[in-house]
Length: 422
Image (cartoon, rainbow, N blue to C red; front, side, top):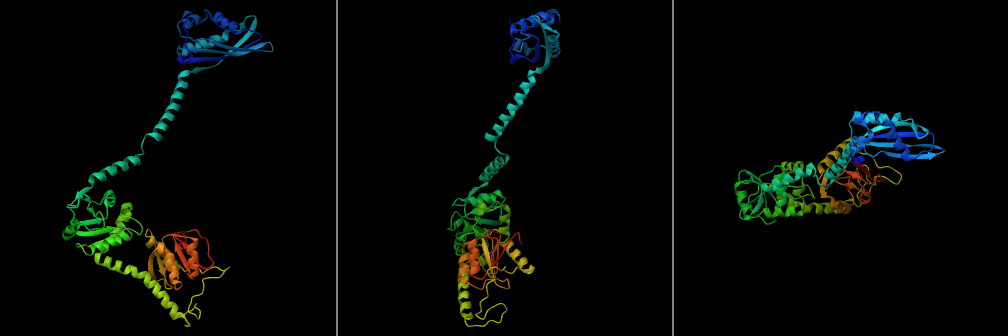
């Protein structure tokens, strides 16, 4: 007799059976075949359907408790919907099994393909998720990869020194001279084609020759190496302009906005040389002024309000008191200076009239405050206000500390301000 497995069936008929007596599984199966025989005609005879494989093995599970039997009947079918429904309905005509009354109730006809379809959908979701996570690259990664490949294709070797350069060196009347290959790649990324690299601090002959024919802007990193290159250029070539990356940053890591801002703020080469020449004197001037002020204030009775007879400004506050809040005019000035310092990692040191006494790198700020000891009214800097800088400012009788953010909430002597406060 041919049989059909449930996995090959299209439908499965589920039904419950209740019998008023104790019977066995063969009794139930015999009653199903016997009492439906001839009921549905020869085409839907259960024995013939099972023999041809259109009805599968009839599964019967029964359990006898307290003299009564109950259980389930399951019939797999590969017939169509209508024929399967007729076979299922025929089960409910069975009213006796052996000598006992019986009642069969079809609970549902399950479409196996729906279950399989749901399994396929669920499994497909899992496979797709795995595919996306493991092998499918992010669209941004693809774009970055293509853009990098284009930049590498655009970069050329120029002159006898084979300097890294963009494709627009010969065509352009103005050139941007940077330090290295990575700088050229970053400039190409943001649309600057008229760029060439020096490949070191020594000035190549190619750059010297180009400087005689074209307008040259030297674009160096915001570190001491950049200053050295500018000094080196002083004795070679005809350089027109100079610009620098913000303090502590390199040209290769600047954004498009930062590149444009730096190039817009370029200065004449002669001015750049002059600034570098006087840069080292700034700290010395600070120290000299501090010593001179200290000497002149000894025994001097100041007439300026708020100063003691010794000429020293008293502390901004005392334990338990709060330092004076800034005036609206002071806040406005602090805000403008803080915006001007964004990205520079530098600091402005101000006097009581909010004049800038000088600008120092953030790394030298504490040392400068300690060397001056007094005469500092406010410090505005591109950084986070921390406990050590607050302590240094308190000892120097600084009134205001203004930074991008703060890790110190309050001070009894120094009024702390951040960009959010302004």
